[in-house]
Image (cartoon, rainbow over all chains, first blue to last red; front, side, top):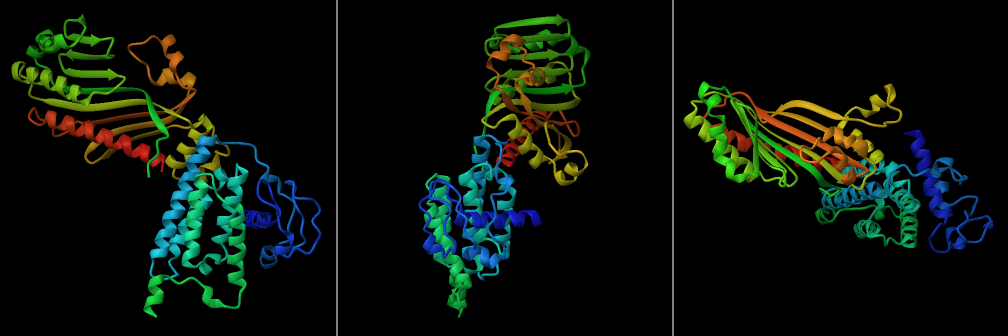
Length: 201
Length: 237
């Protein structure tokens, strides 16, 4: 489990620092202190620290060797597990949205289980690994507690688009930053409340 | 949430009623088989108490012996025909041969399923789905799972069932599906590189009477179909 958490942290930091087939990385918006060492031509940039890594307490590191993966499973088998993951997470999110309180941990627990079960399959493809890392970031460290209802809808929509091969990584990156800002923000009222919970107040 | 990752490449269905023979049933084997003679292309009688009606083009045959009625078909399954043919022969046997004791009724379906998954994918999928304590197995001897087979003999809903599921490489398929209608050399031309093997045999031995035998056969077929579809759905979920 410890090794998995470190990997997860590394992946989260890679979301901000590593650009592969995505749009230009805007250094100024990330608040990165150091000068980027390379231009955005698909080469890893090396900031000193990012917002995400500051709170996690782990500095950005080199790409771990285990991220360089030799294909183990066929494309159709990976697609099979990807489909299972997407459908399960969407249904669990929908159940969580309908639940009476924000403490319906069973749905979050189920999502984490699904991510963990399908982790080995999705990590074989770079685009899947990035998407998996976004989900793992959202559903770890109680980050999910700060999701608003419309944000849950955003995640569900991105899951559907991911399945169709049309996910927008820029939007996902901005979403992750926004979520983290909510969590770090002074305003604790940004914490998620279901519609029913609000009506009861 | 079932997906369509598997499709039938080859399959065989076998339905059988086994009863305690009488001297009359022994003597009346050919007379019983004659009930269906017109439904088949040809017949063969290797011994006096065994007649087989067969149609090579349709890959099916019916065998009548002193103590069994058996229907076998490869390729597309026709459960209606299976029930119809067995019922016709069964009524002949019970009405005219004095058969009163039913010993066993069974239905078996053997399938070779095409899949886009590789052999390694199949091993991974089946191992994770069908071996409940994979963590402990990995610790003891299974660092890298290269091949596996699932075999289960059990009782469910009062039916006896024997289930066999496993991944097959191309060269293994003839060992698991020995067709009675095509030569072994012919088989290798149409075989996939890898496949999923599913063999389910459901039967009853107790509480069988001449009155309930056909009804039990229908129930056994239904149970076999349920087990097969449930396993496939589980593997794909």
